[in-house]
Each structure stands twice: as structure tokens, then as C-alpha cells.
Image 1 (cartoon, rainbow, N blue to C red):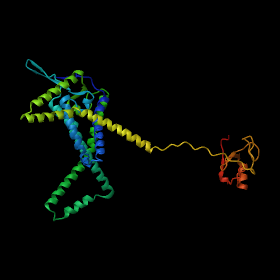
Image 2: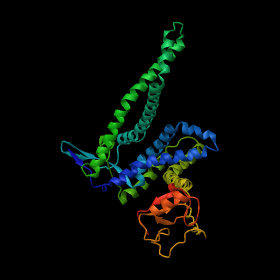
Image 3: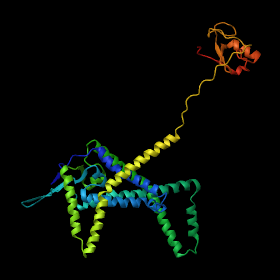
Image 4: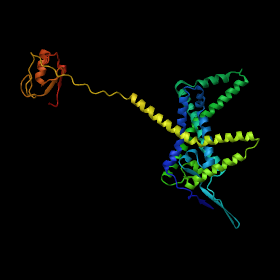
Length: 384
């Protein structure tokens, strides 16, 4: 007999779940950026970037394990006041005794499987993604330039005087290449399947068609809900009880107990302030990203200068044709302009037939007497 758990807290919105899912990616980007900046002056930090997947997975393993142990939620879910609850409660009826399991806390198995889905599987997927990228690049190079490794391996296999170590190395190389080819073939299907299931569950969750935000939560039988005020108060008391029990388990002489107690206190302090510090790191990263992006945009943006003032109007030469007071009259024929045209060397407007005939004969502007050709005559389709 199964009953759904629905009274521990309200259902979080889709945007809360999406923000909690996105937080580890933002945290990883912030840590990678910070380590990269620090590595400019301390080159030994580059080793952390060489093992970026392992370092971040180890950090998240510690944070997720601590968060699941103390708050029954993942690291990012606890920041949004969310809690993980078993989706089903089992009620056992043995003879006349009714035993109901009414606890809303996660079982140990569910916490371990949550760690698997939160840390281990993303780490394996990241490594498979890097292997797939290498295999894809090698396949593209082989398509363009030919596969030199295969010809080299063929020549090595054809030699009869190969040592045992060389043969073992060649076998290892073949197994590695075979594994990379299998990953290169299977990873796109695996990635498309996981992303498709994730998208389907998110759409169903957004439409209130399911209570599970992801396939992992459905497989684990876990619902995510908002923590009530009483649960938040109980969490602090439970943490203090757990830590007091851990201090009681210390064994050995008094000075060893004191040393172990100091180490535990330091560990508790680091874990308690880890959330605040990491969120501050994400905020700092976003601020620096916005700052440098704005600076790059300002540097790359073209400089806008004010338009230059117009040149002074050309002066009419003394021996040139005088301009009539009426601007619609042609200075050459002293009639209203027909097919107005401008001579570009001066900007004065005439009838097309008049200016064409004058420039053809005298090679000059009639008003300014500046040298001109018929190629500098432009028709005007809107007379002013």
C-alpha cells in the first residue's frame, strides 16, 4: 500500500528548479576563471586546470555529501530553500499491527544514489565528451590529410623482430583506439537520449503533468519541495546533534582529542561558509565578466565624431555669368529651368541643355570659371 507524500512543502516552480540546476555550471565557470587569473602569477595552479574535471568533481562531491547529510538536499537546492523527499511512503501491515513509516527524510541508499547522479555521472559524461571531441578531431584530420597512425601501426605489425614491450604497447594502443571509436559512435546517441529525456521531463514539469523535474529524480523516487519553517529550524538542531555525536566518537589521549576536535571545528567552519564563499565567487565572476565585456565593447565600438562643417559656398568670378535673384531661373538662358542639372565643381544649377552646351564648348563652369567636363554634370530629379 503506497501513499504519495504531498504535505511537507509546496512544489517549487520550474524556474526555481532550472536555477538550481544551472548553479553548478556557473560555479564551475567562476572557479575556472578565478584559477586561470591566479595562474598567471602562480604557474603551479595550471595543474588544477589540467585536471579541471577531477578537481571540480572532488569539490562538488564534498559539498554535495555534506549538503545531503545535513539538509536532505543538493548543494544548489539548499540555497533555494528546497528539500528532497521520498516520493512514496510504505505502510507495512503485519497481522494486526500497523506499522507506518512516516519519516520524510531520505534514506541512506537514496543519498548515495543522489551523489551518483549529482557528481559521478556528470563527471563520466564530461570525460566521454572530451574523448568524443578528440576522436572527432582525429577523424577530421584523417579525412583531410590521411591517417598516418594506421600506416605506422601496419608497418610496426609487419616487423617480425618486435619486442614484448612493443607488442604490449601496440595492443594497448589498439584497445585505446577501439574504445575511442566506440565512444565516438555511441556518445552522440547517448547525449541525444539524455538531453531528450531531460527536455521531455522539463516540459512535463512545466505543464504540471509530472512531479519529477528530471529522469534521475524519477528513477530515485524523490520529489523536490520547498522546506517549511519548522524544517529549517530542525535542520540546525540536527546538524548540532550530528556534530556532537562525532565529537563523542573521538578516541585516544587528551591531546589527540583536542587536535581532532580542532580539525573538526575547522572542517565545520569551512563547510558552513562554503556556500556563502562560492556564491560570492559566482557573483564576482559575473561582475568581472560584465566589466570586461563592457570594456571590450567600448574599445571595439567605432568612435563617433561630429559631422564636419559644410564647405564655404563658391564665389562667382567677375568674368563669369552673374546669378539671377530668382533661384528657379537658369543663369545662362535666363528662363525657368528645364531638366535642371548641377555642375559638381561649383554646385550651381542650370538647364541641362544650357550647361551641357557651355561645358562642351568652354570646358569651364559658367559662374566660377573653374575647369569642368561633361562628366561632372549631374541631373537633378527634385528641383529646389
